[in-house]
Length: 439
Image (tube, rainbow, N blue to C red; front, side):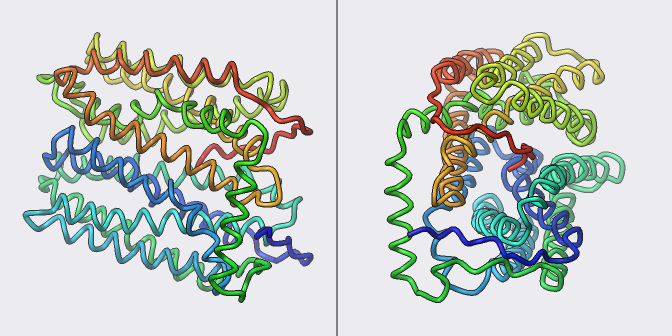
């Protein structure tokens, strides 16, 4: 039984009223939970090991989202679930803000971040469903670039603008880190509430699933059928290995890179302020990522994914040398540091296109395309969870030495290249959709 709904024949009006805000509302909480939370805890004195170990588990809802996605189909509409999850995130992030004032803030705020992560992962499922079942195929192609741009704009606001603002409040205005981050989390909560009210007015409901109104039993049958059909695909186990390891080395950079940039020089970090790191992430770093993503998409379209896949994997993993260099050289010039970080961001943007297209074209095709793509992105989230958790164990094993840790990252970047070279490809007509390179 397929749970893939058909695209409505009638093209809805005012697509621009909700597509940009919908994907902005997806990127903002995703990066707030996945990256900004780690910076917040670093500012508030939590140890590197605890940050890496415990914030990594916030990726778990994205890993498990294929398990509950079929149970959203029989009840209400996709639009209802989007709006509901945005209000849940508003409440959860508001509770994160107020939890920062209590002595046990770390455990309490993690709990509320986990609720936010669950709601954000659910929003991912239904928001993509709204778009795919409302927009015509022509409009899906036309607005796919806008999707990626708006998702990444949410990421820029979270990891760039908001982090810079905390540095401004702390360094220039004399606010405590607790006060700074309380204000930021309140702002993000208000933003999610604003998205909820806006989408309650303008967001279409999305087309109903064939199992709409059929109850829990049908959802269980759909879940079973989707799992069986996924693992019956030719070469699927090796494909899963490719998807898991493609960003294996990058997972360590993603978790520990920002903490290394912030950590004091006395312990081997670069000692950047929130303002400087936020500026790098929100300006030149983002520009480099977007340029890299567009170049990766162009390369895949020109050469086909099969021929360009290993090249894109090299583009992702080779720039990990940048953090190896930074941890050994410890440069002090902020412009030079920014340029080095930009190289890594460019490589990440270019290489991530190969990852997203491999999941779309090799793992997702079939009668359960939307659900199987959720499976693939869940594997990607499992990589982030695993590498983040391992970072919290590996870093103290190397005596809290950043040079040794980033040497380990270079070694961890070898398996992705091997598996990309050996990656299996299914025999079907390759098309290269525009990749937003976001979520």
